Image 1 (cartoon, rainbow, N blue to C red):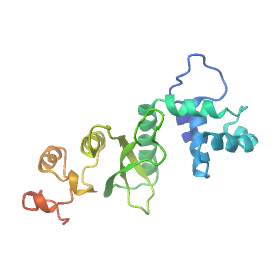
Image 2: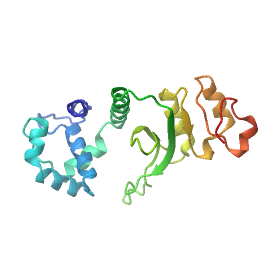
Image 3: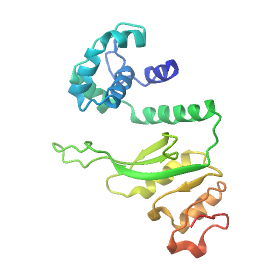
Image 4: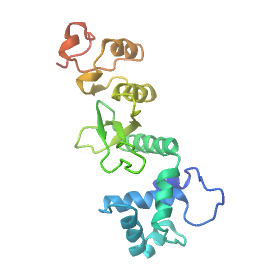
Length: 210
């Protein structure tokens, strides 16, 4: 757990005036723990921290000042999302390496995040494409946000470009099984794609999934 704490503490600090207490990365880590414990909203997260102040201080090993809900909100709005995603991917790879596991089956799917819409700014809910292991493994490898003016296909292609999935069986929705994508990733290695009925006759020779 100490390694994960250090990774969150190493996230870029967006504040112009930096103080020694309550690094944004620490607030974000605690917020994620609060959400996993059932907190629903920034006010709930602040209350969760307030009720566990002493445990949090032992957890971090230093004094902790419970932030206001507005401060927690600012962390979510201003944290470096790309740095956070890099942290997520590195931590996932570390878990796999530590357990000596080899990737064999990876699933891709896109979902809209409940509660992420902004009515005041008329913004729709965030649409995220994820690469994850089978349900029994409970591990997400990487995520990419879908541009509001595009579909999932470009986001998934970016994920596949960034990750080494050579030799993996990749499962996905039929909308992603396009011939140009087969040709694009055939050069990178034998990623095996599920076949859709549209391209069954033109699928890669190494694919055995129907």
